[in-house]
Image (cartoon, rainbow, N blue to C red; front, top):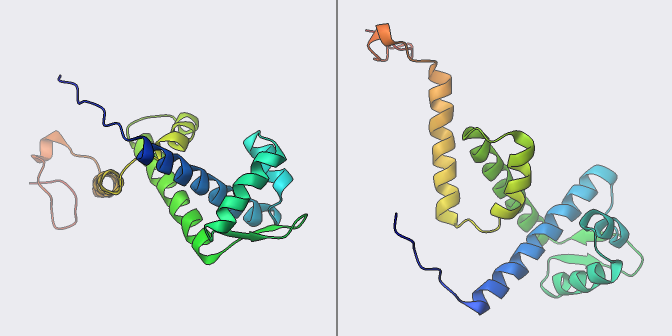
Length: 161
């Protein structure tokens, strides 16, 4: 197997890390709002295992980017763009988890691994994951193949002669 050389582009890498942070924050803010009714700096800091100062600095950037709104010592809200980003991040996560599970990866491991993978797969790769999952679903719905049937589908969608 030949090795593909790694493409190095520091500017792109920094931009991807910035997007990854924005996605994680948007997804976590949406989750906090859904589960507790609000998202606060202290809640984000605890969930992320970082200081409230780091959260506050990141939120300033997200506000500048038009993803969140907040006032000091008040709840954090997602803007329409922030909600879209959170929904997209959640969708990406769910697709990656489901794909890994379809390969036999146990649920807890798939969820943990998806946290890193979801930010680094291209749109094309994500679409390939979804295509694979649709094929797996169709096969599952069609039922198991039986050798004695010759593997042909009947009009009822089952295998038969």
